[in-house]
Length: 371
Image (cartoon, rainbow, N blue to C red; front, top):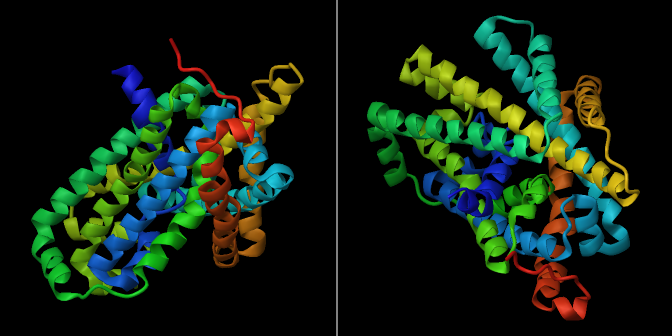
C-alpha cells in the first residue's frame, strides 16, 4: 500500500499542494477564469485544464525518470538545452507573484480569524514555511500528503453541506445557464501558468522505477490537482449571479452556511494550502541548489534551505508592497502564462515526447527497473 501511494498518489498530492494555495483556495481564481463560461462551460474549462496537466505531467515524469532529473535545473537542461535558464527566470518571477499573494492572504485570514495585525499573519506563514523546509524529502512529502488529505475532507464536507442548504439553487443555475464561449481558451490558459508547478513535484519522481509508473502517476496527477477546484466550483454555482462580484467567494459561501465552527475548519484548510504551496515551490529551489552541491560532491548545508526560502518570501512580500499587489498580479500572471506555455507545455509535448519515445536516439540514460 505504501508503494502504491508513493508511486501513483503522492506526485498528484504534491502537485495539488503546489497549485491550490497560490490559486483556487479562496475561489477567486476560479471565478476569474471559469465563471464567464457559465456553470457547465466552467466545468468543461476545468476538465480541459485537467487534461493538459495530466498529459504534460505524464511526459515530464517519464523524461525526469529516464534522465534522473530530479530538480528543475537538470530537467530543463535536458528539455531546453542551453536555454534552460529562461525557465528559471520565469519560475522565479512567478514565485515572487505567488508568494506575495499568499502572504497577503495569510495576513487577511489571521486578521479575520484572530484579530491579529495582517503583518503577523504574513510573517507567521513565512516562519512556518521556513521551519518545514528544514525537513528532508520524506518529511516534506508526509506533511504535504497529510495536509492535502485534510483539504479533501473539508472540501467534500463543503460540497455536501452546500448541496443540502442551497442545492436547489445549484441545480437551477446548471439547468438555466447555457454553456458559454471560450471555455477551452480559459482551460488552456489556466493550465498554462499552473503547469509551472511541475518543478515542485520532480523530487517525487525518485519513487518511480518504471515507465508505466511515471505515466500512470502523471495521468492521475491532473484529476488529483483539479478535484477540489471542481468541488468548489459546483458549490459556487448556487450563487452564480452574485459570486462574480465577491472578493472572497469562500467567505461568501461560508456565510450562507451559517456555521462559524466550519468557517474555522475551512480557513484552517486555506492556511494549510498557503503553507503547502510555499513549501512545494521553495523546495524546488532548494533541490536546484542541492543539485549544484551534489555536482561538486558536497552536501548542501541544512540551514541554507530555510535561509534561502525565508529570504525569497521576504523579497516577495517587499515586492508586493513596493509595486502593489494588484499591479503585480495584473502584470505578472498574463505574461507568465504565455511564457510557461512556450517554455514548458510546447517543449514537453514536442521535444519531451520525442525523447521518451526514442531514448536511444536522444542519447538518454535509461534507468533499469528496480528488482
